[in-house]
Length: 173
Image 1: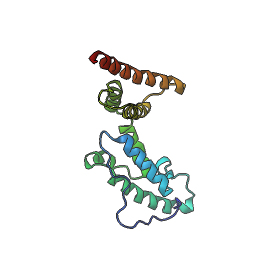
Image 2: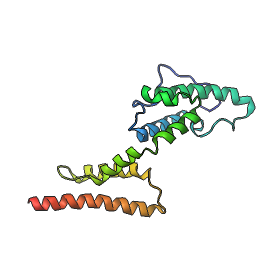
Image 3: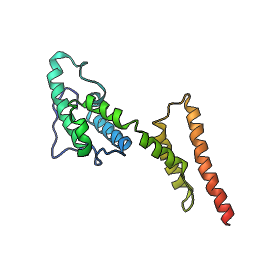
Image 4: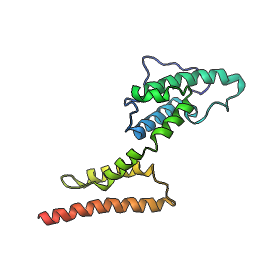
């Protein structure tokens, strides 16, 4: 579906099964991006429409308003109060990003999740999967150059968690 075309959906379209709440911005934004990419409308999230030729502007706006209405439906009502004023996909997307992507509580929760990982009562595969998930979430917050530096720090955090659990297991036996 090209950006200039009119939207046509059958049934009740839904961008994501989980509505945006105060704790799930990462998974919500990823689902929204994938949906917009799959529909061929990612430019509506990243651009404000000023790039559209004048003769196609009205049609682009019409599609954008329809997509924005779908975005509204992907947010919990309590949060929609602060986002409903944004009537284009781009402005809605950027505002949601500015409010929820840099949430200090989420940074604390993510860091704490990684720092408190324990391997007790689980296998190495599930431990590493949870550690990698926490690392990917934490990586969103950190801006370190080069990338190898951040990978080293995160690897050390994971190893620290593993070594503490290993020491506990050795002491128990």
